[in-house]
Amino acid sequence: MVPRYTRPVMAAIWSPENRYRIWFEIEALACEAMAEYGAIPAGAAKTIRERGDAAMAAFSQADLDRIDEIEAETRHDVIAFLTWLAEKVGPDSRFVHLGMTSSDVLDTCLSVQMVQATDLLLADLDAVLAALKRRAFEHKYTLTIGRSHGIHAEPTSFGLKIAGHYAEFARNRERLLRARDEIAVCAISGAVGTYAHIDPRVEEYVAARLGLKPEGVSTQVIPRDRHAAYFCALAVIASGIERLATEVRHLQRSEVREAEEFFHKGQKGSSAMPHKRNPVLSENLTGLARLVRSHVIPALENVALWHERDISHSSVERNICPDGTIGLDFALMRLAGMMEKLVVYPDQMQANIDSLGGVVHSGEVLLALARAGILREDAYRIVQRNAMETWTKLGHKGARTFRENLAADPEVAGRVPPEVLDAAMDSNAHLRQIDHTYTRVFGESGPARA
Image (tube, rainbow, N blue to C red; front, side, top):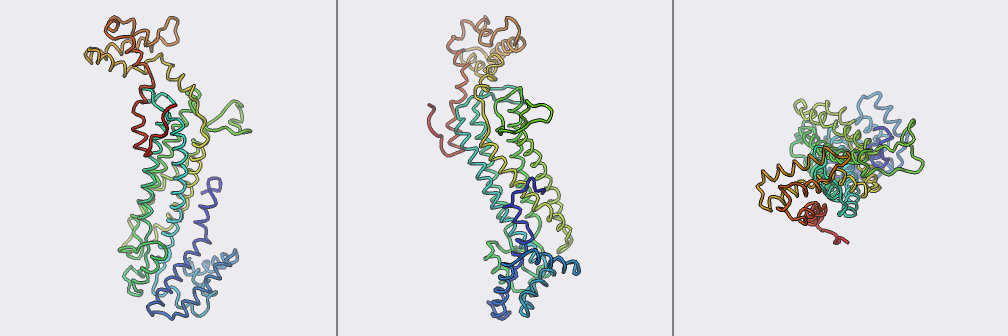
């Protein structure tokens, strides 16, 4: 991922330095396990740990350059690292990587990195959830118009809109936890996964100390269905980001103006039109979501490897693992900040509710007429006729509101009391069950309406 969309804390997880530290830890733990059951001398394991730890603590650009120099000759990244490590450890390095294969190191390391990245993403989701919860309670009773097909439907609460996104991100957090569990596996089973040259106890030892669990059947590599499921989870989270970003983009349109991204002092919206205040953050989030979702197909195609292993997945994962997690990390933190500072305009929301002359209350009026004894089919016809009369003459001289048209309709006058019509036209009626939803989503309804 380009630096513009990269947070250093996530980039560090995918850095060569972190990768080599994890590689050493896997090798050192394997040696300690082998020493524990007598496969190698305990003193050798101690030397490997002490000298290796010292080398990793002093790890510098010179060490990176040395590993790259060796790899340029060997054309093998793990062998290059092991050669560098042997230079640091000395003769006891002959016990390093004993009975292991490259995939034991590479796949187990990838699991550790993905767990580290996922823990950061979980923290990011917590920040998004906190921002959404605060804004949902802040605007619990802020009336706004609900829309279906982009057309005014019935009044709702702006807080309820946000609560829906909160519920989605809460589900996404659970999905990510399940995905984390699925990729948190260790494979140290040797060539073609038979444990012919290494005791299974080594795998169990290393896995326990890295916070992983042993892979059931590694075949030499960890099966890539685990990784495919992980990237599908990231993609679903990205889609949730885009859904909320799209809502903000629509609400900020000049014709709507119900909410907008915070506009910083000195910020410029257009190089040509100084009046512009564009939804650049939510548009950026939409683009980042597309990138994260684009990794799903390569991850799925990585599942079908040849026989016990090949490396067709390797070049894919070297790209999608860092880019997918880095991109999602950046997007989640940008989303949290955007929602925390989102500027909301309740007066404009009310103006939009009123802008169609009251026709948005047609559903409640339909129910009122039915309760007054009018057949539903007849009630629908009456309500629609008056709604269309209102809609088609909006803004014209002599136009009447929906309420006025209903009062003048002979099929309504005298059959439905004025106070019943007034109650049907009250937007607050659409908030009567809001505590039920808030309690279900947040576990609490919050303070009563002032």
